[in-house]
Length: 464
Image 1 (spheres, one colour):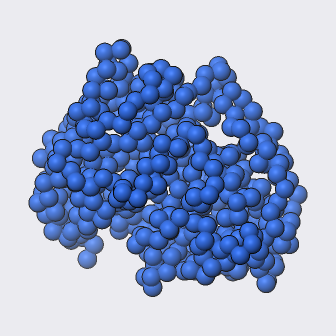
Image 2 (image 1 turned 90 degrees about the vertical axis):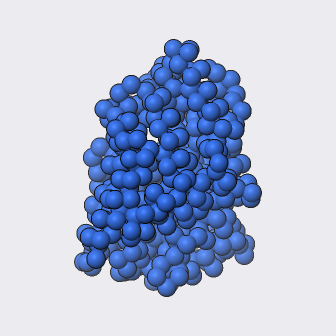
Image 3 (image 1 turned 135 degrees about the vertical axis):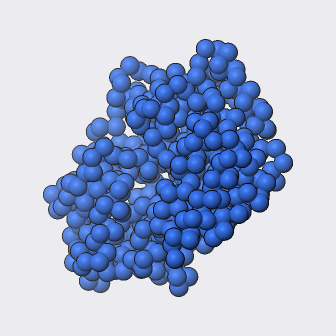
């Protein structure tokens, strides 16, 4: 499921695993869109842990998932197995996506922190690591996972954890990934056939024109989610300035990079072309209404992350009409004059607070979860990608994964990490207002980069 999804109400249900078996979730994965192997995984035997915490004791985990989400079901099974195999008493609070800001950040100045939490690397970096709230986890990468002599480092793809945004002030990795995500243009092959990768933005716009000619909206866009609105400009801009280019511009104290680098204005111009094809009401609806309209066939294309099949499949199952989607996807084409063939990736994983009372238990569970007997649940149950190259790739995500694995591509952290700058405030204060106005046609491309330059300079002046 989409790790960013804003749950309507924060769920704070606490689960003491002493009396909760893992078989409960196996029975509710039926339906027209049930994933093969989901029930089989949830009823599979527990792998043996290679690392058992010396202290035994307990483990308090604050989860970014809710207990009824696919990832929550996978984690429940692994936590139950860990408790059974190690004797560690596990307590979980299923807090949802905002746990890191609503629960963890306020707790950092107290002694009441969890031993383990999870979130995407940018959010952990912005809200928890930057104020010194995380422990370095370099030692975890050397831990065995219960598959012979294999360690965490042995089984993880280096691109999933070894990048600058996953380093603390001392240069230590603060997050160990268990899921990776990217993004793509999604469509239903059953309705329009397979689409070859568009080579230019003109080709992409041609697909939109064809949709309109067929009496359909071209692009579904949930405009009430700011980071969904970020996709278009950032994807295009990255192809002009490459990895690190957006982050560098965002941190320019003068703001002049936005107007001095021609690629930013051109990326804005191409973004403005695309936003003209957004479905009616895109900026007035509440998520997930517009995404659901795409699943219902009201629009031909949807640009979101690799959680799209999982989320829309779940929605269609709940509708109970027997509707299925034959998921196809392709990447953003290169805009005119761009030279960086980029692909975005986001790592979601575990982190340990600096004040954790049971860090050894937390680290032991991290290593345990990366055992293939546990991690295989992410593709099998949650229909998402994992940072272990030797595990299954869901059929719907194979085209995206092929691009992510292409060594000729320039890998970029999602949004180039600009959502983590200044604890996320740069995005909310500077970027989001300008981006929304650009998408709505209220700012020209020239006015957009000019506003970014002006507001960014003012922002950094006020930070001192």
